[in-house]
Image (cartoon, rainbow, N blue to C red; front, side):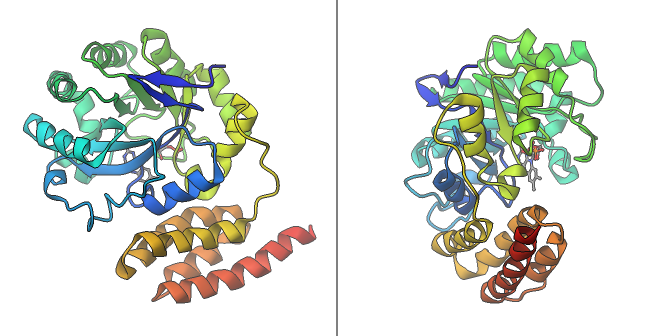
Length: 330
Ligand SMILES: Cc1cc2nc3c(=O)[nH]c(=O)nc-3n(C[C@H](O)[C@H](O)[C@H](O)COP(=O)(O)O)c2cc1C
């Protein structure tokens, strides 16, 4: 298995990608993942191309970035061609190492803007968007899609070939249809179909939470790499486990200290964000991290009902002390 992908001089090694996630893939989570190891390419959350040019990188929580957060891909949410040039100029100024186009987001608010997955229904429009973006940058330009409205092989193939033809350097595929919820099993073999049509690297995304999932996904898709979304918040050390076990990169991950990982995340929030921006991000993260524990919903709701970061930390410490002890007893 190839342990690196080279895109226009950017070396992605190992080919393990952080999925863009609104409210989650900010500076603090990215630094936590970097500290744990195994990541090939980091990502921002989706950034509105229309708003990006006027965002102040020193104030915007979406643009906070520390020097060690590299390589970092910035994801653009685009709905009009005219938004592209100013947004990409800004990304160049911000030191983006790659630029991703969001063509998959199924959220109704995003679709009503004519962005995200609604663009998959407008291939002519996407052709123009990608061509314009390609002219604006020599950085790796990638796209992220879902499988479409229905499993329609011809339509999907035409769309993917169009993206490749217009100069997309890498495609990540969330292996679900637009309307399929996260509880549905992802269609990993469909990522394999996409891979069979294209020459550019194809990355599989959706439903990877363990080494076993990762192996199954690779076996079913033959993908060039894997992209982890929610698992990055549940088990931020999973990148390091996959890097070692799948690609022989880095050392074996021993016992994981989950309370220390959670507390480190809080520290990173404190280092990265203004006080009023921290608690909301801890709540979002805790919703996922809580899945490590059989009674994790108590952790999530304790944090959810906290009025301050300190209160949340104290309640979390109590939960973690009790629940780690319970797990060790078994
Ligand atoms: C809270 C949340 C926010 C998300 N935000 C984005 C986003 O900003 N851009 C995007 O392309 N996908 C977004 N997604 C989709 C993820 O990138 C990913 O495709 C999806 O979660 C499936 O991967 P997973 O099963 O590994 O989580 C989001 C998903 C979640 C759960």
